[in-house]
Length: 140
Image 1 (cartoon, one colour):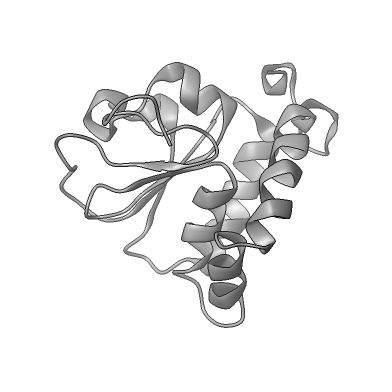
Image 2 (cartoon, one colour):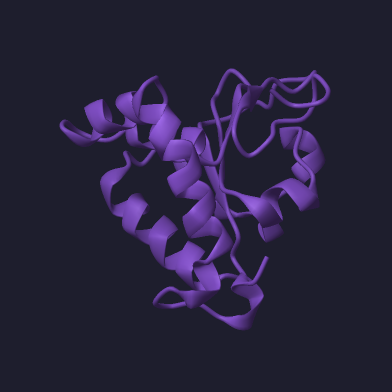
């Protein structure tokens, strides 16, 4: 859980004090080639009403996020303002996809799968500069 009601950490969920108005949104690091490639792959499976945007194009304050947070993990902001970070963000985004991806996304956010998904996400995020499509900006 985030440290304040307006912050979501990379492993949890929090709600901003003023929920954003608009469609659900997947937020990623647009400076990272690996993150951009992954987000564009996800875009292919998400319905049109789910936004996929690099954090650099967004007003993070409106989403209840900070630059530090979005440089460390992907985030998903639901239409009701709920904010998911890290593995939970990927899982929540996948819940909007068709089956079986939606079911996999649901499992990613729940124990016992989440107990594995959280550290796997951290390992990938911490090593994204070593993955295909990465750039120097991918280093955390």
